[in-house]
Image: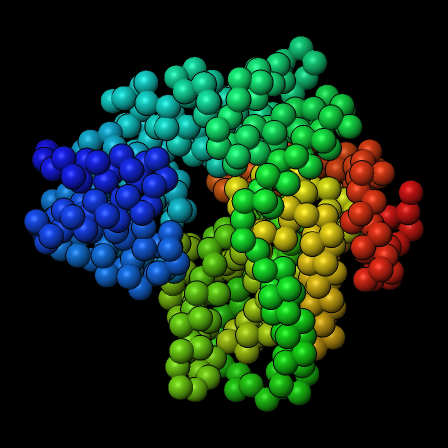
Length: 517
């Protein structure tokens, strides 16, 4: 169905596309004064409300958009997106599925593909992205979105070709440069260094686009072992991000240490445990610490199905906290229901790799007493470099400054140590990334035994899995196990001194022989 837009709504859509939130809202309010049932105006206000951290207002506006424009695919898709962002996974999936028959235009197909991708429905996302590109092969954004989906599914050559096409059509498309750089190891005869440098020399008006290009350049320099240049680009990119974001490092650290203080042995023992019999698996840890490797190993077992990074436990915990009393049985049941409704697992054991679940280990044990938690640790120096150089696009705000990164790494290690001391040994297992790399068979057996499952040789062939991956390690996990990431920080030892000095100051016990120069 063709939707006719007023000039005001068209102008609001253009303003939103250019990042002008205030003008978008002014134009939408002017439209609603004339036409209170303008679905597109309400949909745009849902988007701006979310950007302004007003989730309840976003949901109200999205509902009005869908109600007033039941045949407008983009209004229905916006509602599904807002539901997902609010953690309403089952509702979001239902809304997305209902919007699918309406998604006949390339724009709607591309938008719905993005929502299905967020919901972990990558096959549906791929099909819709292909339809959008087939209809509009010169639309750079559609080409990039298709490439991003192909990366998750392991179609790396196709992803690179679509990144090339997107850049050809939009030469300043910073994210396409970065995605392309990450798809393979660059070589002296096949890289994009001069192309990226030319783009930077021509000037970039947006600071975060410049940062993205510098992350791409750093990745290619590191592949060519031009270490000084790689670090310089990473430092410049991280500085651009840090200068353009709001981050209360003190508040984030206070939250972690408050968990250690309040969720002590006495407090955890006093919590009313649920009686649920389910035994899900949680693999958690800091990003770039080896969680994806552990997940892929375990998910290669015939009894285990990974649901990826869902954030469902955090969402359900927040909802439960609004209640008048703690009901951990209800919390566990709500978490399992969300998984069942959205992920529809077919195997006996589900594996949740949401990184930040390390913040919820105490509540996980109370809500799901038979759950197994595997905490992944990595040498702090290697993890520092891996985190610092990663382009998280504004996530993990502690990773853009070396001293703030050291502060948070120490906080994580103290929290992990706390969980080991306060939770039953049958509940928590700590695994070091370096130990997996040094002896994958022994560490894999150790994890499988901890889970109470029989051994299967297939877990050692984790790289053969065709399961999708939306993580920063989506490319690396397609390769057999390698050890070149162990000790890589030494190539940047001098530049990483601010991190190491802070680590010595805060936690000299973490500066082991491995981290000595």
